[in-house]
Every structure is written in C-alpha cells, then in structure tokens.
Length: 410
Image (tube, rainbow, N blue to C red; front, side, top):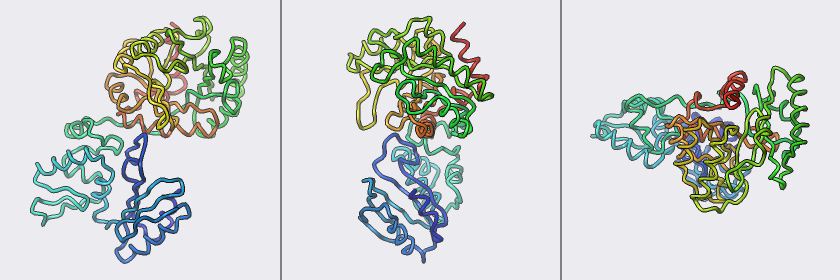
C-alpha cells in the first residue's frame, strides 16, 4: 500500500523495499524504503511521502531520509539517494549487518572500498560504475546473492564457488496442502475452497480438517470422514481436471501415537501429523513423541514442527536435530507453515533440512479463503532456507503428487 502510493509520484525514478522485510525475516522492527529522484525534487518527494494518509507521526524529515510512524505503530524510513548510488545503497540497506561485514572485507581484499555510496578503488578516486545490484556482486566476482540469503550463513562462500542454488519461487507453486474446511474449524465449504484455488491458478488442493481429538476444532469422527470423502469424490468429478486430495491434520497424542486407527489413516491420500496439546513436555519426551509419529508408515508430513506462534508462544522444547534426522531416515516431509503467525519450520532449521535433502511443503494452514494467499509468506521462508523447487512438494504436478503419495501406501 505504501509502496504503491510512492510509485504514484512523478518524482520517483527507482524504488525498492530494503532491510529485513526485503530479506523476508519472520519478524521485523521497521520498514526501509529506498528511492531515487533528481536532486531538485528531493524536498518535494519528502513532502509527498509525509502526506501518506496512514502516517501517524513524522519523526524526522530531511532531503536524504524521512522517518515516520504509521498508524499501525510500525516505524518506516524513506531513504532518498542518487541514481548512481542506488545499487550500492540497496545492497547496503538490505543487509544483513553480518553479510555486509563479510562483503566489505572481501572488497577490501580485492583492493576496493564498498559502502552505501559506491564501490571505489581504495584511494577513493576511482568509482566502479554499477547500474544494478547484480553488478555490485559481479564486480566482487560473486554469484548474485538473493536478498533472502543475506544472513551470513555461508552464502558468500557459496557464491564465490558458484554454488548458490536456484531458489523456489512463488510461481513454482502448483497447489496447496493444509487447508481447513467447514467440516472442522474452517469458514468455507470444500467446493468454495477448490473454486478459489482454481481462480488463483492452482491445479490441486489438499483438504486437511482436524482429527477427532481436536474436539475444540470440531474434529472429524470416522463417520464424518466417510461423508467428506464422498463429497470430495463428487467434486473431483465435477471440477476435473482440478484435483482435491483427501487429507487430515491428525493429532500426535502425548505418547506419539495418532488419534485414528491405521485402517482409518490408510483411507486418506496423505496425513499431516501435528501437535495440538501437551506443549510443555520435557524435551526428551516431546522429541520422542514427534519422532514416533514420523516413523508411522501412514504419516506423510509433520505440521508446524515447533509449535511456535511468533511474538506469542515460544517453540516447545525439542531436539530438532533428532527430528530432522528421523524425517530424513523415513523420507518424511517437514512443513513450512506459511501462516504469518507461525512461519514454522524456522528458516535456520530449514537450511539444515534442505542440506539433508529433506523435502518441505509450503502450506498456508488456511481457515478462510483469504488465508490461501499466505503461501507467499512461506515461500519467503523456504527461500531463506535455500530450498529449491525440486525439494518442495507442492511444486509438483497433480500426477506427480499422486505418485508421491502412493509410496506411503505400498
């Protein structure tokens, strides 16, 4: 909304989000926006920015930086730079601090000085011209490093060797899993969900209502599962070639068992196993609980693996190394829950998972139609975790998904 407003200004030549928001961090403290304009228009652009209707307070205003607080309480800095400096300023203000420290050290070793104003020979008399951020990295003899990766987790070393992966993109997503309907605690019918997915350009959806232990969420009894599957069969005929997969978000009970018998679980196309109770178990018990579920032959993937709610609930005590090892050994998927209050699995663990070849599925955990679009937040976390298209389940076609699920039935 704010970016769209600024783009309406005739003074703006180039514009980009920067900072932690551009790096797709799970939480941010403020918003950084970078723009270029002609020097004579700097004051006029600053004035235009401060007229944005959602600004509550202007805390600082000059010709290079304007700081405001929005009505939602979020601080925002607008930085106005020259067009020549834009690629360098964008790289610098995107961060992270640790990434920039290593990058500046590399530049120094190559005989350059790198800062937000440019790349210079170390006598600072010779300016290395770069028209884009990609050119900045190229001048330092590096692969371009996507903003999401700039956390000093080995990305500069990998870029030096040309080993950075092609990260998954939102356009790669072919369908959605972990979607709740009005059969449990969702707001919409299965048909409404499917039709919205078709509108969004997806080819399939996996319905995963809550299981019977989740009485608070209208969890499904065995009889209601039967009725739901009959409805899905009818809708698959009606909506073909779009596909609705039969799933369940099954509760992992405190002892690690599932809350349906094996023959009931076998009737689903896929099973997401999740913890929804007894969050305060000791680490060894919680770890064993989740690992036991991952070993279950009918379980396809682990939902919101650490149970965190950002700024609201800490992750439960868990040996995530052991969980990832178990997932790898049993060829199970670890979900990236794209709900913006979760973004779980955390990207730091996601890096380890991706390096171990553990597949993920970027799932919206949607309870309303609007929540289907949350998948974009999960894509950001997957990119931060260095995930490629090949390791993300819902980049597969519907036929590939069928074949993938079939392996759990053999």
